[in-house]
Image (cartoon, rainbow, N blue to C red; front, side):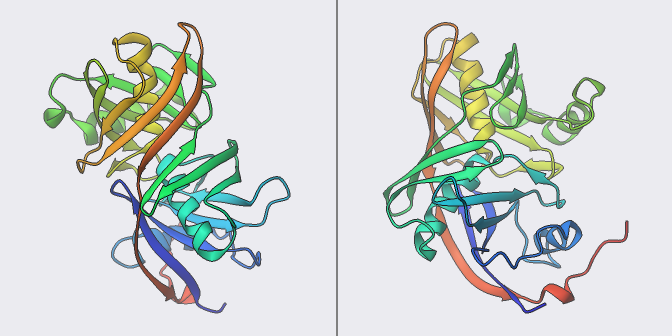
Length: 266
């Protein structure tokens, strides 16, 4: 296969490899090589590989792959990055756009260079401290975010029987009313703490508004100190008009020899 061209970006410290697949030539079913591409330091290294493909329903289609090669329905920070990338490659012709994901149609707006807002699915399930915000999240409230056992406790909860077979993301959250939360996330597919998690920020804000006295917009501070803003409406029973706003940055572009990627034996 010919070398694969890519762009590396990050959204609030959450880094991604983005590929223009409008021609439909990327081997998206080769999950082991996608995982090898995401591996550090043998591959490019990232917390997600994102494809931009053609769509009959929207401006383009976003497909998201975790670093272990599994495909996920949605990634909030990845959605913000893909909006900027799609504008760059011409998949979106305007700063306002829509794109198809496995979690539904998402709308995005490039507010200014380096700042993007996206619509997010209204939570499809809220059960106390468990929220499906496009993907599942378990919220663990803590007083001291610095002392949270993100790796150990996060791994235990992510693999708990109650969340089998797919598992869950785990967000450790310190709530600071009236409208702030500090969040650290153990992310399934990454299988470690991630630099930031957009859907986790949304899930944390939803639980904060429902149960901890927060009000929209909620400002979520990520592990690396970035600020994500979660907008929305809550009538005491239902959430709607959920948005995720925050920074994106293009880091570099390059090509990678697909056939030379080192595949981990199964």
